[in-house]
Picture 1 (cartoon, protein in one colour):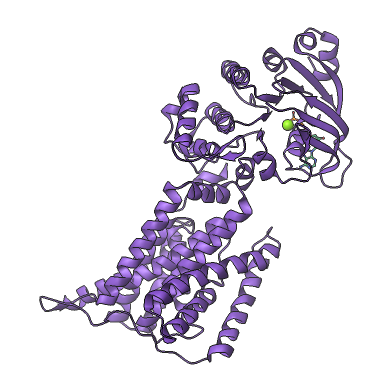
Picture 2 (cartoon, each protein chain N blue to C red):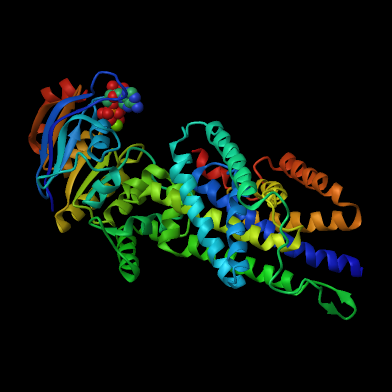
Length: 292
Length: 242
Ligand SMILES: Nc1ncnc2c1ncn2[C@@H]1O[C@H](COP(=O)(O)OP(=O)(O)OP(=O)(O)O)[C@@H](O)[C@H]1O
Ligand SMILES: [Mg+2]
């Protein structure tokens, strides 16, 4: 029982990171109708920069701000400088370019920073709280949950309550109609990429202190699990990303805790298959809307 | 509020023969002009070329004498041009209110903010009460008539100088068409809006327009006062098929 409580609470914190990363995939999918297969490699670059900032004497918070800025900038550069130049009629050319970008980024990071793990310290203790003899979340887990909740809440407000959010959504759903209403659609696509890659960078930054540390592949497993969560959630649904992200996080932690870490990817695969068998478009997809 | 001038415009699809070959037409400030013609005459092609969704091979589009030809669709809209395209242009994933807000974010091409946006949207609810009743409904749940109403309201709320409408009557009951065109005429009179109205529904269009222009195979074959056109059976037979 104690073990279950501990695993559940830790799983929620892992799930929050997964949900953030899944949300980043959903944002870019909605903006560009494409899955960004380079998201993991792109998310690690800002974390390296943040680590350089903190080891040069900057605070954790400065590193965090720099990571968000670098993430957003990288998103803009990749979209404007690379993917916009690729034919968009079919998804394949974009996927090939993204895979190439992964190779370039990961090799580039290994060349500049070395291929080894770099230990990353959490800004808060990772020792679990003790509540009446039961170990639950650590202070760092709590921090992760709060940051994820604030960022997701902020993004939800941005998309649903502001005029920029309205234009972002309209440009994604109906580009031609949006242009006819004076919306600069290409700018909205770039903004979507920036929001997405900044969110992914944040997720990767929150992840690394809980793992082995930072290396060019540090976000690869996160990407795989978050992609599964995004697909389970419906790929274009932010709510789906949140719910499925948390669910996958809890699932992975439970399976790792009770069985073995090696069984976790299998469990995710089973979940993905089961959901897609029952609901081929994911749990929260808004597919019925745009078939007319 | 503005004069739209079409100067020897040549437009085609892909690299086929041009649909419009050197077409010239003027829609004066505040006029409501009906653009008539059989299926395939080139009405949609003309309207899409005017807003820059289709590139012109030659010729110019002028708004109050300023050449728009080099501008993108977004920038033409920001100069005060608006198009309600053929068919269902409602963003079906957004609600009625969100569709209207999207249009209300600009006024005559310039950004509009805060309470002014809400006020402009509220004005449209007064004009079209079915939209007010369904303000929180998603676009894909609207009927054809409600969608067309919303598309028109969304264009009007942006207070364009020149409004281009592509077959607003398509698939609608006669009563709804009459109401829609009635609102259009009233708004045009009240605000001095310039309107170019492409229609298959000749009788309805000519009943609200001052002038009718008949297009056939991409050429202007008649350009006369609406009443005169409506009363000319020979012309109707030759180009409009009734
Ligand atoms: N996307 C396209 N590609 C190739 N040809 C096209 C395309 N769209 C229209 N055409 C052709 O251009 C000509 C003019 O078509 P257009 O749609 O402008 O006519 P219209 O007057 O709007 O007709 P309708 O009243 O049926 O809407 C037609 O011969 C049509 O076949
Ligand atoms: Mg047409």
